[in-house]
Amino acid sequence: MRILGISGFYHDSAAALVIDGKIKAAAQEERFTRKKHDSGFPDNAIDYVLAEAGISMAEVDFVVFYDKPLLKFDRLLETYISMAPKGFHSFRLAMPVWLREKLFLKDLLLKKIRQRNNRFRPAQLMFSEHHFSHAASAFYPSPFEEAIVLTLDGVGEWATSTVAVGRGSSLEIVRELHFPHSLGLLYSAFTYYLGFKVNSGEYKVMGLAPYGEPVYQELIFEKIVDLKNDGSFRLDQSYFNYLTGLTMTNQKFSDLFGEPVRKPETEALTQFHMNMAASIQAVTEKIVLTITRSLEHEFRMDNLCMAGGVALNCVANGKILRDSGFKNIWIQPAAGDAGGALGAAFALWHHELGNPREPDRNDAMQGSYLGPEFSDEQIEQTLVEMGAVFTKRSREELIKQTALALTESRSVGWFQGRMEFGPRALGTRSILADPRSETVQKELNLRIKYRESFRPFAPSVLSEDLSDWFEIDCDSPYMLLVADVKKSLRRELTDQENALFGLDKLDIKRSDIPAVTHVDYSARIQTVHIETNPKYHALISEFKRLTGCPVLVNTSFNVRGEPIVCTPADAFKCFMATDLEVLAMGSYMLEKPQQRTVWNVKRETYKDLYKFD
Image 1 (spheres, helix red, strand yellow):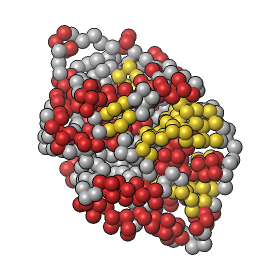
Image 2 (cartoon, helix red, strand yellow; image 1 turned 45 degrees about the vertical axis):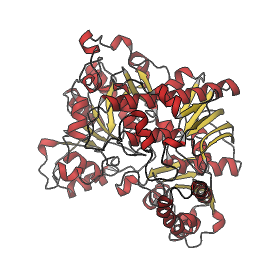
Image 3 (cartoon, helix red, strand yellow; image 1 turned 120 degrees about the horizontal axis):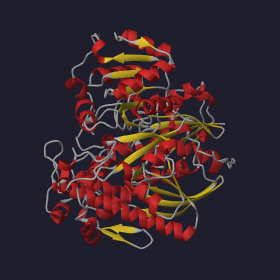
């Protein structure tokens, strides 16, 4: 049976194809349209997953949408009515879109599907609830026979957080927290207050937090968040504007903390903003740890699965792993709305149709390498058309030369195999560098990624060497867990260095791998496995042979505001418009000084193609 899952119309549209309970392909629409967090109907993603399977829409048995728009409209309408006449301006702006598109989403979906198969029947179109899609995306691909499943995000239809129990092919939601009380919206409110883009800049808040102190944590719990012993909580809505307004916070919120909303891009980050980031991160960690400790005590299960946008908070995830009481944790790599497409398909296959489930010893995500792959012939054709200068190498020579370039402190664009599904680059659409360099973090941020200097970079480490380099004893294949660098690798700071505050901490060497060691000695870890990504594993192994270090800097192959590259053309353009020095794409190597191509767009022109996130 072929089931197509779809998410869309809010943010991070995606499509996923599940055939007889196995994932065939999955991809976000943004990768094809080059529009970050694209919310449109995932036409291109659908075309890709069908092509990957070699089938047409006529051969799809069911299409499942990841939430129920009528329930979402019910929440929207009830909220406006309960708050009337306050919020009329917001209501007036929202209603035309709903009445024109979202309220009649079933008709729109049928129309789009019938453009590919005019015999598609309404009975073949199904709808899953938003948080059930999240829960299904977390449990069904996990390696566990049974688990507690926690979903945390902004809001679905009504639910903002859910707890489910998964056993075999059974999945049942047993607890819900409803709008407007939402951990995701709370974090997004602080994201907005700090001058970052909501639904995009939350990870910047997480990255900024270690530069500050959580001096406002108690004030937040005193005035804004009422946290109960079981992890449930209520938010004082008098500080927020997201119920009926066009902003996340209001003047009362600003007055509480004594500063106005930071102006994006124009107002510098100060110690106040860093302390605010540290405070909301600490609040978030306390809430999720209260929830998970309570769940472990109540249900006495060893395993925890997670999904929803808050599950991308890898700092909190690391603390859940260490302190919650659960022995094992598995997080859906596409934890946001994109993963809802996959969860919706699994929900139909297992939950609705009752098909049995056999958990994979690792997991069923195949390393999350579920996107498009390009042959050497396709890559070469693109390079010739774009006027590139390149050499073709054997697999062994490509790996040797790439590793050598990395030891020479050259940055490398690494484009190999199937594209990742989810927000993290996991070694197929990555920019790589030497983690031993003291200058790499600043150079990559400012000269290649064109982003804020404080943003940290993640280490990719050979799974077999993990415990020698980091304080963690479990795999982290999807870069969703934070742990500390091994104490033996850390450098003791001087009294003068310890006395520094804020971004003054940025340039201090903290360990033998300073490019991936954050200011609090932590790192967002990706373990690399020979079974799921043998070529990337071989590259890191060769780098280890040359240097003794089984770690590489791994960041996504894109610039700020740009989706991760998808095609060879995307990769070549990004390579030419940045200070990347080497591009290893398929069997081909390109070096920047050799390029004489006419496609040499100016950096500012390239950056202007994408809105800052």
